[in-house]
Image 1: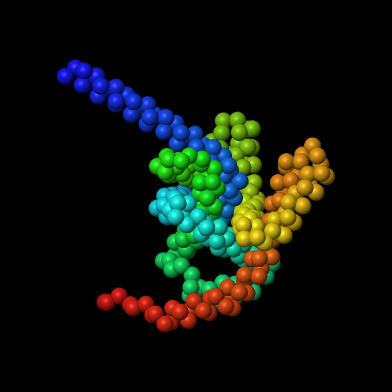
Image 2: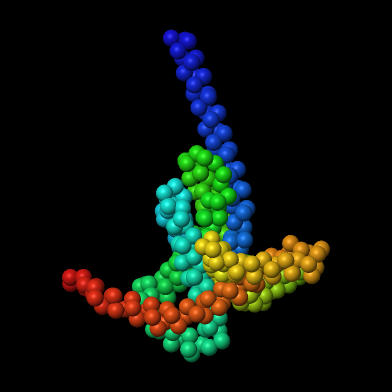
Length: 329
């Protein structure tokens, strides 16, 4: 009996060691993969604050919470299983799906710029899309729905980057690392967003309650600077969506053998690196982002009339063929 018990305890200890090693592997792989996706995290954090601008202060955190919860659902319920299944059974589908998402980001970025430059024409374009837009009960619901929709594309990119950085053969360790990275990324991004959108309230409280003149001055400075910061974040978010979308398309075209856009981006980066050799990494990254942005803007500008004049009317025609029945009173 004692020998059997000792053998059982020895087996349990061995299993615990294996489990601990696996957890170590999961945490390590998740941290490594999240670091690789850092660029996309910045894009996500820059885009989101724009969705809470214009709402009462007491609605800001609930809206961020709704978007964060939607982001976790996007990652864990849809993107995690899809990424794992595609990586096993249909890896060739990943690039085309990413390119569709990238095209959507290019369209979103170009449409925002179009709205800033030609507001009347942009409003007419948006009005033509209203009947095919996601239904919602009010402005807050529409904002949240739009944010979650955009988050889905950014999350798909992030999860794909994370998956490509996880180098383990064990399927379950890979799944756990991907899930851990997804949750950690969401907490980091939307925690930062919550701090950004509540900074003005903190500044106001500090301006009123700080014990020193310097503290009150810092509070007033935060309050005064926040509108400008939100505008800057809106611009950065639009640029981020566009260059991320352009980057996805450029890399996707390269995968399909159309390599001249990729070569143009690489040439721009190489030229920028040679201009200031001491800052080669920074200038190369900036040139790459700028080239991807230009490519994304051109594609997005092309998609605006295509979506407005072709895809939207076609979708309306399809909806008319299958009218929605009103619920029984």
